[in-house]
Image (cartoon, rainbow, N blue to C red; front, side, top):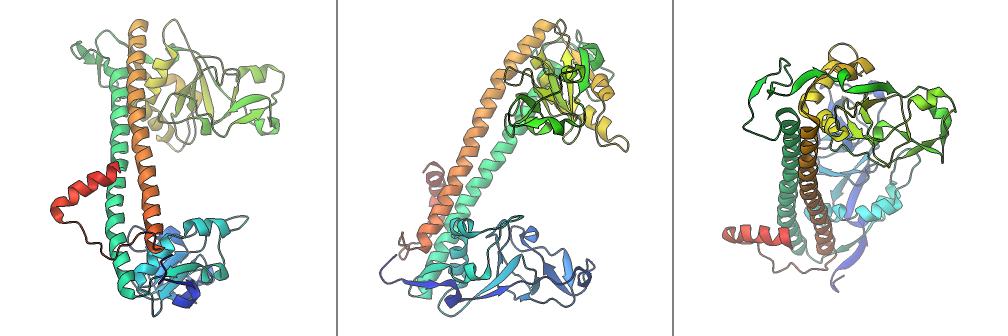
Length: 432
């Protein structure tokens, strides 16, 4: 740290008030008493949002205090815009003489790696009062210099946050566009000049005149699901057991994370739910209609009771075309409508057999698949780059804060950029 800076402990420059939770009977949701915060679940982007009130709160945070989460996720920060009662998931930190509140807030924001290293707990991560009190910081000699560092970080992190928000918005737009491209291709085809006709199905609307509209049972030779009770067959090795966690709404490829294996029974019940190449696997609980097309990576595995296994008639339909069809918005609306139309929140196998679709010729299906495979690869590449951009900006933000509050960069002579140069500064930051 700079020679003139001072090494000290947090307890010497701030008052730390650890929260304490009252009995649940002493809290209410009727707005009676002091607004009460249990933890960082009530934090939003600017100020916390209390969901409970307590007439006699045991511990209070004053207006202007820094609210600091001591339970998972440890280190979340917010500012008290009024007096709050605070539970044991929080502490309120008040700056004392010799340190500015802004500099203190940025120091706490820079301490995540330290907090991650010391937090412990079996059911949830937490840090103790002693660990917070003994956090070490480097303190600039004057509050004027501390205020300059705060001004620098307020502006520079705001610029980075704006760029992160732009990248996140770009990702959402790319995902929306990708979904629109899939939905259009499997319901309207690739030729914009082809004559259209009314499908007679609300979710499908108009379809190409030569496409056949039919229930899905006419394109499947076999529809089943996994059996209950397979948890007793779980094993560290054996055959793959395909669960809902291996499905996604973003792709028709299997998600090979959190893989479970089984040693299945050697009987017909085990064979019935065995995956073959080209099978369509569809979620019938949770996120209804999540789908994948079985490839070599999951062939000969087994499906859980929460997944429908639909085996296509390969003389009529291409597996990947069906996968994209299930991924499309019209089919998603049909499946969700079936699942939530009454009191049930899941699909049965009849729902998988009775959603409507418009079927082109097998040759046209294959053309659509080739088109969508290429387009999805482009979209996924752009989404990956945007995701990587967000990660790099977040890393840069964290490094900038750490460097400023430890004196690794000297901002004493820093001045905010002129308004006309702000756009150039943004571009430089985005590509830096």
